[in-house]
Image (cartoon, rainbow, N blue to C red):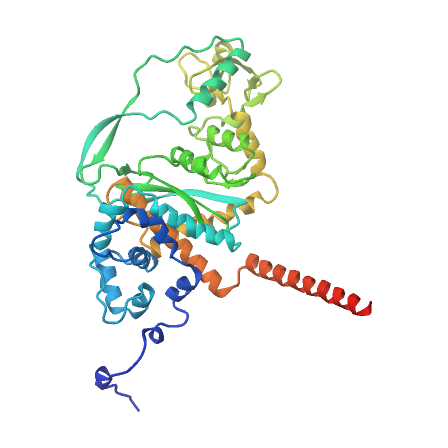
Length: 479
């Protein structure tokens, strides 16, 4: 028999509390049980005056932002609309059924008038990380680093062409010192300081969001974007990130992130993709006692020509041997940090492999070797170490999963704000929410292996203490 539901229940009057309307396993309950947000009052107390009309609770403002990013709501206006009709959200904020929810512009006004230029949001992010550390949920022995692009809130067809100076490399001083030492060891004069003008490059600058960068990679659509260079542990907790315009390469934005990660004590594995496989990064990691875990990078040699690995380097005599068993002798070390090894042009003219070796007009083959090439070879040896392939394969379960969840569930695919500072604020909230969600669920379920091990350890300790006390009482009674 077919059932038919009437609408009489719409007029039902029930006496019920807001507490009873929130499901027992709802995410907001897990978050409320996992984290005490009262620390926010101490962080923002200096931003409020001691007189005047009472403001909206700052914890409520932060929780509204948490709701937006936790549940992937596309805008603040839509977030307020959802809070107005969702009892779980009202319960999380501490608002009653008939209490008026703040206007959607409230957070924006508070940000521009009170929070902008402060480190309040970074402190909230760090507090959540600290709580995860205290629970034993973070394992930072292996750090997974990668970058992802976030489309800017900008029209791709509205831009101007500008000329900018090419930024100096972060490691330039160390590299020039290494070049000087290498030239001196080979009996070459020290290079004079370059007197040429800074290199000028042409870029597209958005007229909508000038601080974004024009991003184009492979077959990707050309868009204005921002890049988030992010680090997470093996359990998927986001430890830190660096926000840059979308046209900044990962190997460049790495340095700001690494500078902050260096405060972590002890050596660690840095698991990264081929975009970070440059001599300077590998050299710095090995110098600091860390282990770079990097993939194989295919040589960028023209089709039909010998690959670089087919030219054998003789470390003792400091020369290269070509596939025809001829010697390429050291010539010089250039300003970019590459040693140049050149062949004998007379022998190259009659070489049967010349068409596979060089197309140079002077019949000379030049093979380059970076002054930090030995560190790159160490990284290759590490790559072939037993177990490193499995470590690298964890990227898809860690940092790539972080980006996938962020884009599919929490609005990481597009920015809602314009300008580097506001985008950084947005990502701070977004990544803090992702960490908070993971922390809350793990605390709620109590199923994490490290957490169980920690609880088991505490129980064993208590048991041993009771046994010792019982023995003492027993010995006293015997006496």
